[in-house]
Length: 344
Image 1 (tube, helix red, strand yellow):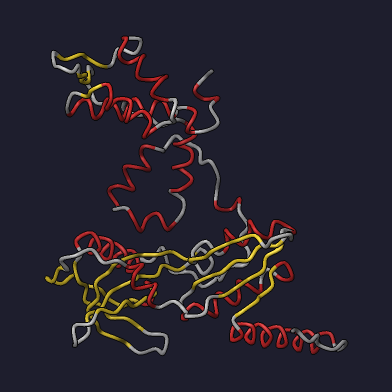
Image 2 (tube, helix red, strand yellow):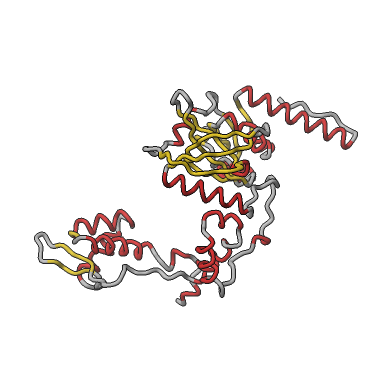
């Protein structure tokens, strides 16, 4: 088969290819016993990989190992050059070319790195273009990804995260107040629906208590690195668990119109538990969420229509009723007929 005919990345660098590469990489560092070879084959491949790969390496069918004079026998890498330098396929290069057109990618590379990447892909056609996609059910006020200042802020944040270094930040709050605080950047998260980057940043209060704040990256006015470094890795998930609502959202999801698959994808950013309801074609989904994102979650749930039913808690159900009744009243005014339905 011609390399250009391979439709998938994995068909070029297969599982066996990756397993042998792992073995040779470790064998280049120190000789390996047969037991260790079999362990590596099973770990990075399948249970039967040890039976298919190890004998070929030891018998010389694949002449990549050299036997050492040790007891028990051990084997080292026989290659003089780096283990299998992987050249990119045309499909991989085409995919990378498409990614370079996304303005968000510039947030994670320097100008020099982007220039090098663009030169490398100069003669490659993109796998797809952004104009090929029509996105719906999304906000339009995305972060200014092409802004020079925004990009500089993201670069500073990413570098400080790697160093666990505190940042001095001027931040414009939702109430249009400018806050000057010192935060430790811990996690940068992107919301596909609203097109915004959120920064999970830890603040030390005057009493020494640690508090996790969530900042919209586009509201950061200025950011500077300080000399203070935090000595430990921060467990962001532990902070988020403390902020979860005591009463989780409980949904009943039908299997109609691929509702379950769509819901699992849509709510993938939330902690959840899904279980099938016995003797029915419905599933019960329990979602644990931060109170601060309740309105956004409410809108997401309503977007599914009748394929999702809210079972609780009562406070969330009440908000659903209010939203639906408001929509019904607006529809009545718009069309001048009919009466709004009562949602129970």
